[in-house]
Length: 315
Image (cartoon, rainbow, N blue to C red; front, side, top):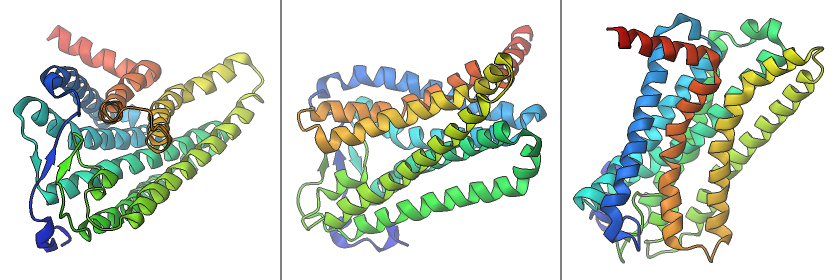
């Protein structure tokens, strides 16, 4: 209904510039972006296929991992195809409803990714700190409640962003110096005060993500305390090994995210071209690397991938 009740001021299209200052190199920049995007699509689809068909992977940890793969596919697919159409086809126009859709799914995927990582940290906490009660705590009913809860929370956090943008009149330029629509970038084109957008767009999602980080840190503090109480070195290494891939994914997700946020707020000497390039890499590189990390560091997935490709190789 929001998209159907747009004011006349918001009826026209927006123009996405691409990467300012690198317009002449757009065709060449698009090649690595396309390759990484294909890696993300193939890697996450293989991961989802293995989790779906292999009964040994029907565990809470792999269910959360499949949800992470779906969210990563959404994050990259919402942004990269439009970026490539700008680079290669010069298709710079985007409608206001299309822009709102892109804003919603990009921010929703980011917040949901953070919530999924928090849920996965809880899963690892239960698996290591209460292994005998793992199946009784993380029952299918509990997992469904967690999934519905984090999905609904992310939806409720990001939906107001759409309403905050639809209330704005855009009576000046409609040129967005970016490859995709994001909340504050679009809001800055309005010809009215956008302090509410700035306050909500920065404080609410960021405080939500920070709370996720705190809960993840608490989970891993308790995990480390439990691990170092184990009697043997082998048992400690095995316990830490089950968390290795998750920790790598956490670092790949939060480190560039907070770097980008701090650079936007305090890095006034950082060029706008760098900001845009970094923002584009962020929506494609973690989705491409996550399935690779889990494929290399998680024994169950690594074995299933080897079996899958060895069977195809013999056909």
